[in-house]
Image 1 (tube, rainbow, N blue to C red):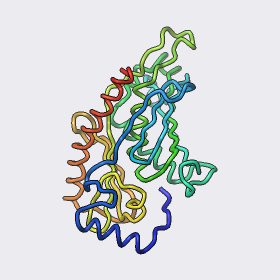
Image 2 (image 1 turned 90 degrees about the vertical axis):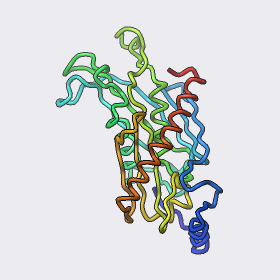
Image 3 (image 1 turned 180 degrees about the vertical axis):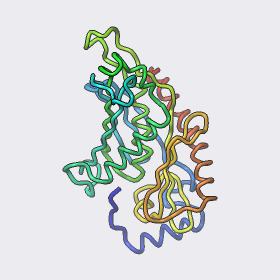
Length: 266
């Protein structure tokens, strides 16, 4: 994401706190900020969700349309993901065509959903080689306070869970829930000096040396990873990040399912 200027004194203070094994907002090193998940927040989408991780706030909408399959997957529906970083979310974001940050955010979210097989795309085929359902995921951050990756992927997953395929609009039978089979959760860790923290807030993100986003499914299988920034991780650090991502991912997934049940989703 775009970096905001952070004073030398503020940076030193954060580093000093981290060296004590603490964080400036009082969290443990591997603890997410409070997460809130809301479903069906948009009346114009086939499915939608809002995810708040601390002050980071993201809305995701799902639209369905008919189209042609890709030539190499004639029996599968199509998934496409877009993210828009607008000044509504942060003064560091600018209007205009997608930049490298919005493209990376969309790709990281798309990869977690796609590589996990979250959606059974074969069930979205209408006529092989001719007509399939296309799933459009649109990510719109409305407040940026660090770690858009986890908020966007969780928002996309929640929105997909709430999606009904509008078959009746096209005289293709009754509407039906989007065929979901896996529920990947992404967890992002940042390395600041010699300390690794999970779910970096904006101040931590702005001084981080390296970033690693790990997406795991309900079976503890790593489905996608994305390395960011110029710094690096040791082999042992990566192993520990994966272990903690599985652990924290399971907790977040349980919260997602509980929120879905309360909202009457699936």
